[in-house]
Image (cartoon, rainbow, N blue to C red):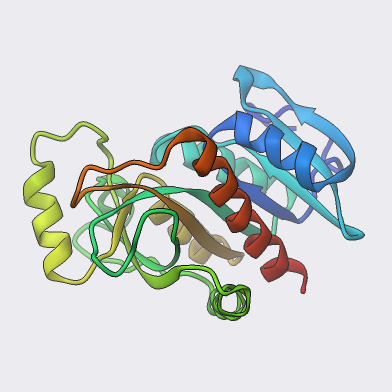
Length: 235
């Protein structure tokens, strides 16, 4: 048992999907899993464990931003023995190569957060995905014939950022494809704690055109990403 996840130590699987929105955690559990049990509802951050094609898997909401994500990821790893963590979320594209409803397989994360500066000081650590998971996700996305790309994501501490345009220009200049708010922390923790991690992101809006995916389409494209995540983990 931990502070923010209050569950029996055996109630969470070693493999965990991590949507930011707890309602998406519930959607994944209800849509994809059988024999589902809800193990957490503290602060409305729902967590579930069930089976996908005979494979035990958990789904845990994490909230938005690196600090919130870090709480749940740390507790899952340290208190419940999670070994493989896959973030399934959304992102905003800032690359012409990544269109609305495409999936970004995040190979590494840029960041503007002070969290890694606090950890590493002047050492500029480059957080990356676990290669085996990334490679399998690439193969499954390719076989599915869906729109996707492999590239870097910019993990930002601020959704409303007075310097956002400047940061976007810098990110674009080095080929970073999209923006989210959690991946840098996932990849950093995975390397520090010796576990596997991957981020898959559905493009929900464009920083280039201002376009957004409508809620109904967003759900269907989110499901396509979850399909790839589960195949990556268990096929």
